[in-house]
Amino acid sequence: MPRKENLSIEERLERAREIFTRKQHDKHKEITHLYKTKIYILAKKSCIVFLWIAQLIFIDWSLPYLKAKDVITSGYRVNYSKSDKHTMTDFYITIQTKQYSKLELFLSSESIEPQVRDSIIVLKSLLLHDPKKVTNINRNETYLVSSSITYLLLPLIIISSILSLLFLFIKNIEVKSFYYFMFFTNIAAVFVLTFYYLK
Image (cartoon, rainbow, N blue to C red; front, side, top):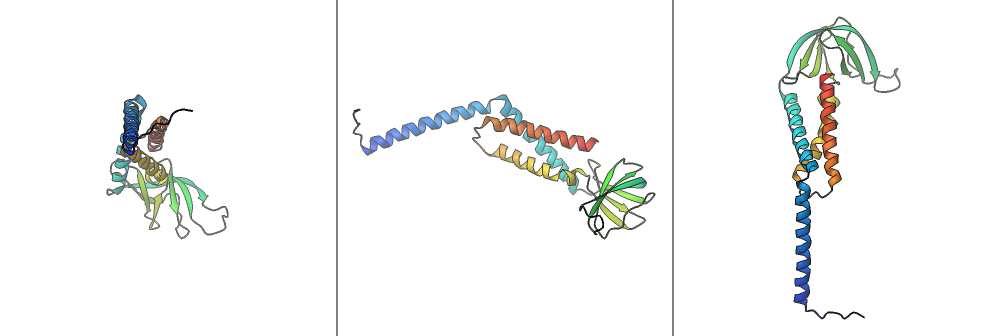
């Protein structure tokens, strides 16, 4: 049988302290190495870029809107939020105007539907010129533009922003696969935002 060491309490505490210090040093060395990897640097930069884009979108949303006169030029397709079309419910309509090939509007059950050749005012954001609301002059109704970036992609913007903030401010993230996840998530989010803005 191996001989047991008869160590005093002080010696055992000192040995435990040395083991803990060595493990902490090895952990710090490993994290420092991970922070120098290319994927961590790319993930960090992608988080910063996305947060700048999200900040721009929210600032643009909060600024006063520009007003542009327009006219509905073609018919529209009605998309009910419920399967029963005979029930009074909220719904969406897609219209075309002289300036926009497609605008999806949200209408409550009490709203008066717009018609072809109705004169409208499009309220768009100051910086990105993203349509936010449509006012129907003929029928004195205002509709939300549900195809706007801030309404259509708001969950994506919020979730990606929260993940980016956590990645930037939580220290000692040792999971390298999470770096890849954050990088590709932010790249995909930027691509989706750019696609919907340009289309």
